Image (cartoon, rainbow, N blue to C red; front, top):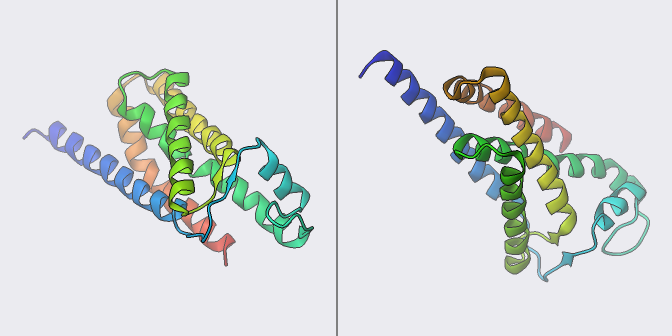
Length: 180
């Protein structure tokens, strides 16, 4: 095997390994809390406004101190958890179209919320679909920008293979520190 093929094999191994680890962590994060009853929010922006205003969506009571501290982290986490999804979908698909790949992220996020509702692991929430889709769109745009800058698939794959683990470790460290 030539040196170039060995390097490409190592890059692919790293890409797919990090992608598999991302999927595993996402499943663990998205399906971590089992509820005794099913719950769903189908009113767009209701949960987001509730978080930011300090009103508990479930009880209707004002719990500003808890929610205001939790709201930015929860909203950002829902966005950032799907950024890699957008990057990897764009990277792995032949069609690099922004809206087609963003639509795939939307579909995946919708399926996740439906499964959360059905399984009672999490709460089905249209706001999560909106925020996850925003994150996925950011990921698609990041990947497309890399293609515009590099114009070479192997360079983009190399950049993502190197940067994904670094950003992943930083992201989980920030989440860990914020949840202490």
